[in-house]
Amino acid sequence: TPVMSAMHHDSTHDLRIVGEKLKDVLG
Image: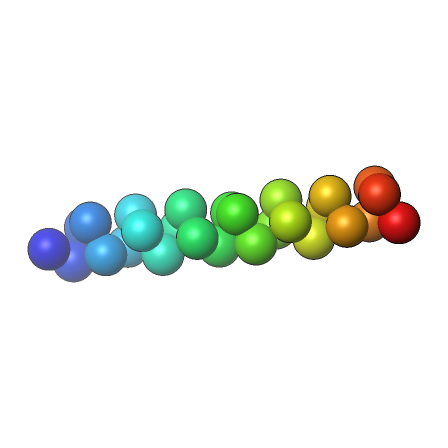
C-alpha cells in the first residue's frame, strides 16, 4: 500500500541520516 511504502521510505531515510551522524561522530 502507498502508506506502507511511504513508511518504509521514511525509515530508510532516517537510517541514512543516523549513519551520516555516526560517521560524523566517529570521524
